[in-house]
Image (cartoon, rainbow, N blue to C red):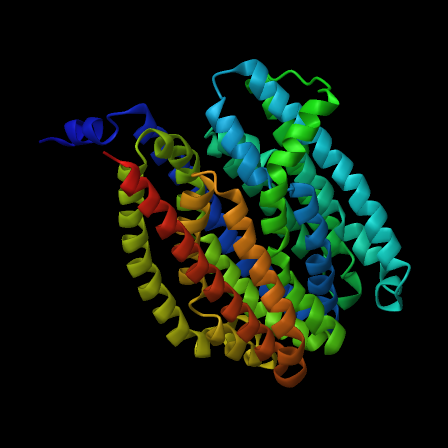
Length: 430
């Protein structure tokens, strides 16, 4: 069989072709996500030093709460709604208009809440300008309709716009940040990257997708608020075992400990992000197929889980062995302590991958949003109980232990609940 015939068979259906295109688009994006931070992160750590870099990391973790608030779970609920109704232009316009109005309203609420917090506590007040400049990330994320592009399975737009923003940010860092006193340029440039990508994203939506913006009724807005609320609760709990670890470190220790943990967490974050091309590409497909043939769809997900787990385990093990040399080489000997929290969190990307299969792909697409929310909220509470004493006694290593325990608990609970729902489906079959 020649190569042309093999290609034709491989791309036999539009669905498969679209999945492959989306996977490749997101893979290119993730490659850029790996390379560009590897260039800027070590540079910023060395130029800014632990104090200023820790402040930047702390401010981003703090602003992360408002990014979660303005997302309101729409990256899952709106993606699903757009995917299901993509052929109905009027319905898609309704979803788009409603989601954007809600997100803009939540952005204004976030700005008010942030201002109250900043001017109520000295720790925030003394660096108020850093937090306001970092808030531009919230503005850009509100404007950028990633949920729309995922729902329409047009991942190439996400890829192009994000790479454009990151390239501009990366080049600008080297141009404007030359010494520790230039630290304010980091949130300025980061926010500009988000905002430019958001504006271009909206322009593409109106130019290429025939979307008409119209103000929906209050009843329609209430519907989308209610629909996204369970997912918002679950996603809002994510910072309780991620960004909260950085915030607690900043409150109970110092910016140096924040830097040591953040460097380890950033590397783990890059490794977790490597699964995004796959899990984001298959989510819209699973949302449709699981309604048609749930048993067959879950069987295919199991194969993806098995293959992905083996690949991840091998990659993470090799990375762990190299980290003793790699981390001091990248960040300098002054930050070699990051090796310890990194090794503690080493297998979190594998744990998170399995949790995504059972949680995002199965529970959410089976409409079990409340179960999904319950797991993440419970995990957030557990992390809040653990994080303070662990940080007090073990500093950055305590934050890493808390993160590992939380991620493991999520995966265990997602597995138990998804298996229960799968058995219900199997028993209902004749």
